Image (cartoon, rainbow, N blue to C red; front, side, top):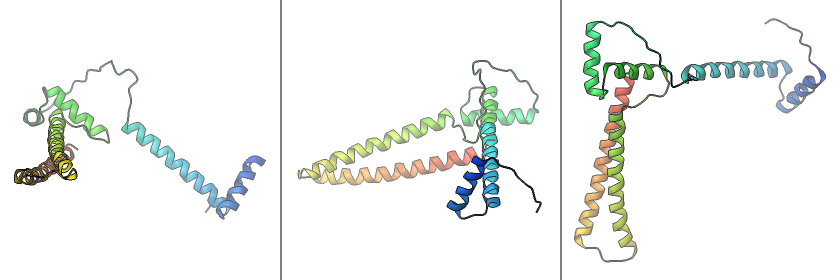
Length: 178
């Protein structure tokens, strides 16, 4: 451990003494704590800058050209069929963006599947809600209503399982993009 002599103006010294009383810690530990917090803030800011790189002029595009091997091109063309991208350029751009940013981007196919499943579950929920409203108003339920309720509950369970599997597949697919 090396020793340093630090000179503070009266205001800083007063604040350090207040912190010392408040925290019950020696001054050198308080200073070390402040320095460590500042270093962590700087590291976090650097990570955020890299993760959320923002280009000021988002309308301008830069053309980048590079060469790939025929095997890589064939692989990417096969992936286009799976991901639903329109071109080799869009597939490469999509993969590049997902490798740069912390939060993964989802394909339009993945998002439309989520929207479809969400819509179906909401529709089933409305059916169940209608049946429960009649039960709450003490209307007599026919045996068909009980069957519809049971079918709706089963359908919700199936859709939730389907959605769960779809989310697992999407996350598995997204993790393979890294």
